[in-house]
Amino acid sequence: MGEAHQHFAPWTENVVRALNNHQGNALSGHPYTCPADGSGGSVKHSDRRILVANELGWFCPFLRCGYHQKWAYVGHVVASTPLDADRVARVTPSDREALNDG
Image (cartoon, rainbow, N blue to C red; front, side, top):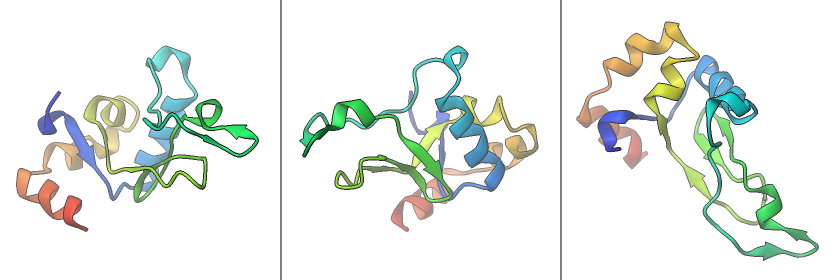
């Protein structure tokens, strides 16, 4: 899927809540995960790869990793947050570019 299907951070509280709910819902499909496959000390990174959302995007819970992703699929946002659907629909390519530069 291309950028037209992506919703870029910064995200509202409702979007963050919806995305984190998606992460813990087996019916929502595969969760967003960190692509890193290394290990960190006594805790294997692969055991903690499910990303956590906040207003700035997705973050790997393994603190030493530093992985950050600034987008989520629009369907995961719209399906859970109907009040934000209009905002998502109005994001233009130039909006996306500005958000990604930040």
